[in-house]
Length: 272
Image 1: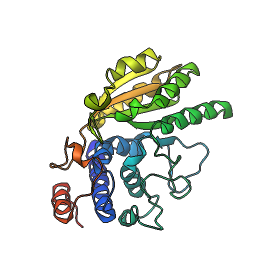
Image 2: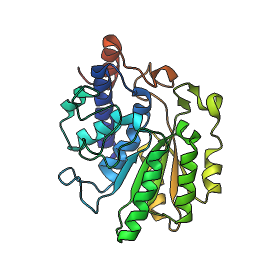
Image 3: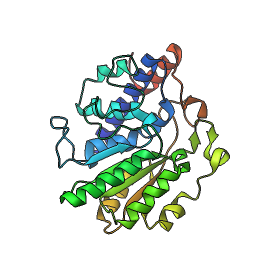
Image 4: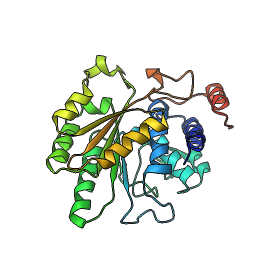
């Protein structure tokens, strides 16, 4: 898919995120917007998935380890055709499939229920190992938050992935520098991320998380690497695409009001 069409898809995903979080009156727009381009490229170009057969045993797997960014995952699945984008307006409502964190039992296309940070990447390691045991060639992708790297479980997973030489596993760190309580470096510094993964014998790659060419090259390099898991450290901007949300920690976990939503959708070219 060419970059112009990918940009259009990513913009639609961002519109769906804003509309869904506004309708819910709660949610996590900042980190959803920061990973929107990453997820768009994965679902519309990189991964082998089919909304007509969401349980295909040969499909690529995706695990949103930063499960609070569920609006971004739901929006990508909706735009891909797993369900009607209008269902985004039921986000977090009682009885809705689209709860605050993704559920594999409720939502077609969700490969793993996530929410407790660190557990998603651990499950992705298990999926990659299971694929090897089953003789499958599918790839497993997992997106983590940078604040999530403060969880010890992430590094246990990193150790296991390297030990088993899981080269079908590709992790992506959404490195926007902010978490719920402030800057990562002030809450619990996770730097240097690249050196830490390298010390666990991962193939470490970097990319501009909002540039499709940069991300595409990194995913290609990850797929070409044999004998080691890969991690892409994607530099991103929290709240990307909505001017007043960009790089603002306050938008980690709150919904825009009516006027803020109007402004955001106007910037994105969407409508309520």
